[in-house]
Image (cartoon, rainbow, N blue to C red; front, top):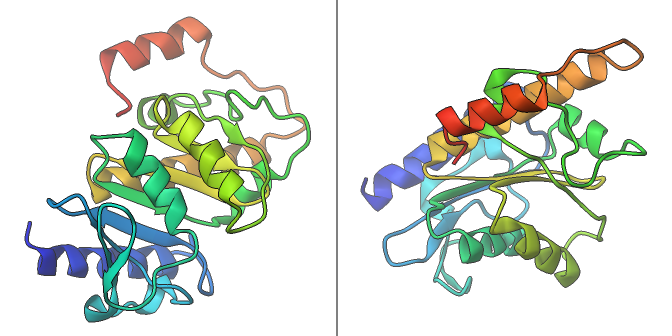
Length: 212
């Protein structure tokens, strides 16, 4: 896909997320990796619902701005994912309501913070680790993400939101949406006896269909 088409795809995706309430204000960011190892990214202080293809940030492989508007201050999250996942061609980070709500709960399993409620969640997300809280822009957050990114294409930042990498932008979005829907289900089921998939059932799904 040409760079101009990728720019249009990022903007259309951002508008779709915004219009469906999966992002709000100027929160959230999207990036797509380019053939030269750099990437296109949504700019700082920009609503995903009103992106301009010509003003997207273009960064080199080391995350330095080449042209376009200044990138989001959360660009380091994307750099951390790309640096650890050669097959990643897109990264999505949202402050989506239900996922953020789960990230604020006490007592989550930091190795896998949502139960396998549905087959589709298991197939698109797998295990979802919880990254400890760090202030926005803190370099320690980048290091924490890097430690997990080699084994996990999706993770939840404590009191912050999800970060999801995909082999394509479409796959990254599908996985992010599945995570958000599962977080919503998890919150709806609080206080009720739930019956998630068994470990054997979840393991079987992972073998039959790769989450990555």
